[in-house]
Image (tube, rainbow, N blue to C red; front, side, top):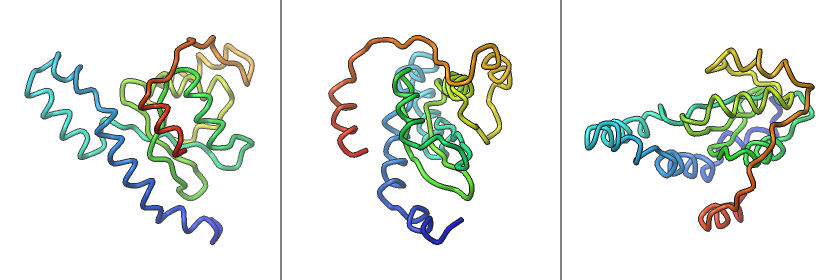
Length: 153
């Protein structure tokens, strides 16, 4: 760690945005459909404990910049929040229901994921493609809220 990294550890804006985004990106509808009010309460507790926002870590000692990783994932519908630096890693959160897809995309593109994989088969699947490849993207327009939030990134 460089002393220049120190301000990143104490960035209150990213911490506040991370906490708020965990609630904004929660699966409220799915929780209600599965278990009604009890499901919503369970999702609320998951937000408080960050159980619904898995953290993915990526080795900093690579040619991949954080913005490049975020753009890769965004092209495939994966939203990223609560970005930061921890030692030799970059980290960020994704939706619990998207973590397996996000890991697959990163590994297939050759991004050095340093966190434990939620689905270890992703490494196998990604090995079937040349490094740097991506699956075809869906052509969808970002919503108004996404466009507004993109102004701050």
